[in-house]
Length: 257
Figure (cartoon, rainbow, N blue to C red):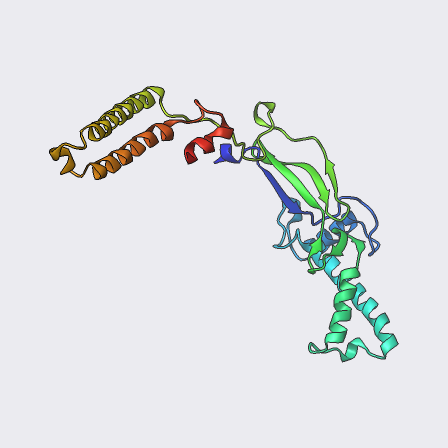
């Protein structure tokens, strides 16, 4: 299993701002981490031994989510002032205010402790995507992809077996598969013998058509039957002809013949 997983790539949304910049809250992501760890220590968590509560990694998302809601409500309140409405009178059946909140949330964008906070038209969080590769049983960061800016930051840290980049798609190779030549010759010879015999019998019917024995055996029917036999035997030869005998552009012509 370890050998199969070696070298695979994985992606995940980043939950912590990678730049130690001041965010909208006045804290950097590191400031937020230290403040959060300090509060967790007060609650009895052994941070020094990496014993964190469940959901610790998602804490920046929750923190920025509160800021997103606050900023969206603030924008909505400013717009509602012009129409004399207020968020205090909002109900879940009020579509006008709901649309204003939705519009404000979509236009919300700021730098938070989890990175640049923005939302798609479907309401999904737009975040940096971290790309990692497993090497020797451990994940190594290869780079980041910024969906908004359509920018890929690459560290050139990838490693591949034998220093060879693997295929990123299925390679289709066209291989000409033909009928065995000895088999084709054998079957064509048998079909040729059958065609020759059928032609001899047709000629025999024509030459001796006036004899009573031949006339009473329905020579016309016999001739039609022999022509059918010849057609079937000719198809044996034609269907055996493949790419080793004719060009690709003539192949369909031979088959349709």
